Image 1: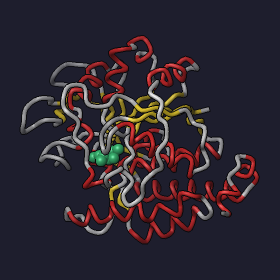
Image 2: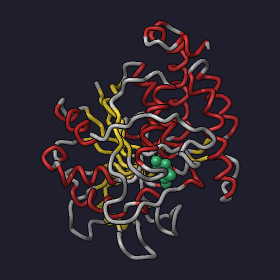
Image 3: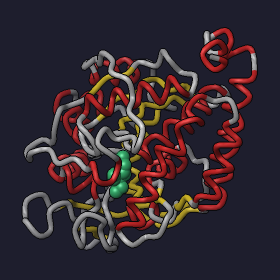
Image 4: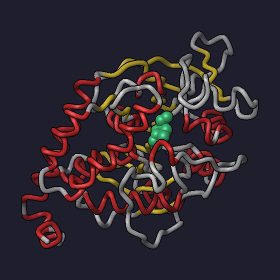
Length: 332
Ligand code: BDR
Ligand code: CA
């Protein structure tokens, strides 16, 4: 069985990634081993509260969950309330809750159960992954399937002319992770994730497919904020759902094109902080450390997500949700 560790910073597009993984967990296609959070869109504790609440609204109250490191390896933390709202979920606020901090122990537990089918997916800054490689090199070395959302490869950035947000927030972490890579890491850069565009009509359909799933009630208000942000920056009243596509790619649920490359990340220069430099021709004579996703079948990706939403609806219409104590809540 495929098992997943998600390290995320919800975050509106991270929320869609959580909804997808929760549905696959209900369907028995994956086991969501644990969810940890990085500091990025909002601080790591708030991200953990958000992730816990989103999972609860998706029928998964008991997934091990912890907040990761409070900020980037070397730079002060910058968050982006203008993109994801003050608390990271647009116009919705998750309830307060206690947050655990044993994130690396959760990863170790998961790794010790075996790594052949274990996927580590990072949809926030790579801070925790870089720290894990430093703190637990023997466990890091066992990870065979790592997928990271970040970077813009020979492509305009969304934060500076050349840098993507996750890599810009913690460029040292991104650099360290690719330096430490023992096998090519799957990199979902902005080049491809920007194509995963959600339009209001599709959101209507998604909410309908989610049916009685508690998250359905709030998804419109969460996403409205993201639509408005994209409109404000000239992208139109729609939204790029980067992290959902990243999860689909990681699990092989969408066809992609890719290329092997050796990448490095510029950590310090004021103008080029977080910029990916990619050797696509082997000119550095270094082993490839990245499988760069260069394209994906976006229409199929949305179809897969819509099927996942229908799985949620089935879960909440049936006995499984009742057994988990959910019906009373939905009927209140
Ligand atoms: C990335 O930045 C964040 O704001 C999103 O959640 C996504 O992971 C896109 O650049
Ligand atoms: Ca994210």
